[in-house]
Image (cartoon, rainbow, N blue to C red; front, side, top):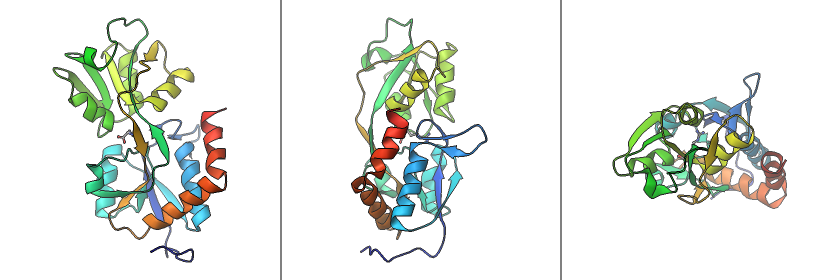
Length: 229
Ligand code: ARG
């Protein structure tokens, strides 16, 4: 098991796909920012290990964990049974869920069932992409990032986007997206986890740090910074 004294003898490489504000994104100068970035740094400090971030496409993260070219990933990744066959997850650190985004002038799409035969944009490799593929007759268009998918909706090229509710809401509330609303009723309840390779020696250390910051108030501070300002 994990002891307080265990320390990796290297700087852990932690992957993220940084186009997902307010969770992980690049600031004006290109530096990584966001809830997940602050959280991962706090976890590393609390459990006394060093990290370095690496940017990867979202659908490249699981293969990189399996190939062990990275040691961990924090990328608003939903813990799913399917992913858990190939990677390991930390204890959950955030509750989210999928929502449908549509243009504000759209009166026809009222929920999941009205998506049939519609055009839906998604970020590839995500739970939103999976959900979209389950819609009968829908044409699913996959993009490298959620902002690109939302952009396509704003431009009128698709009818809807299926994406994590807090990420779509943030884009709307910051004014980065205009003329877009989300359907309040969530399609799923999902929990984010930090991922490692299966049987990684680092997972228990990550869980230790996460448990510490949940207990000492640090998690709550970071949460407030990004979600209650
Ligand atoms: N929670 C969703 C998933 O796990 C989307 C995550 C997208 N993350 C990102 N950094 N782009 O599939």
